[in-house]
Image 1 (cartoon, helix red, strand yellow):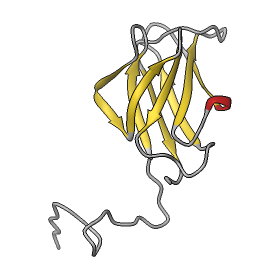
Image 2 (cartoon, rainbow, N blue to C red):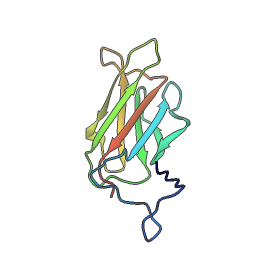
Image 3 (cartoon, one colour):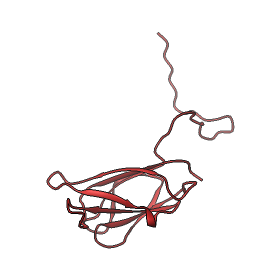
Image 4 (cartoon, rainbow, N blue to C red):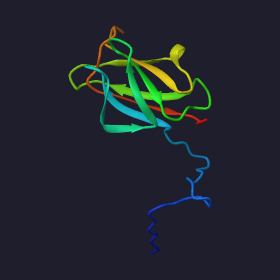
Length: 124
């Protein structure tokens, strides 16, 4: 049996390798919005900051922009006792910012103790 041990893989010029026919999340963040929005335990990738836009509404600001202003996302939220519904308001979506809203089962805006969202697509 062969064994391959590698610490770092880089392209010929020392940058990141190109993945072909694969897609990875271009951003992710885990945060709470029950007080001022805060990222949990530094759990984020390509997120520069969160902006509180009022009850249940948070703008996610990206470090590196997507190549288009509408891109794929996936999310979840809740606290184990209360189910939440979540949605991204695409009318406020740009290549570098997207707005997330959390609510209860009646779609009334409610802050959450736990929220996770990730985006997919090409970066600029």
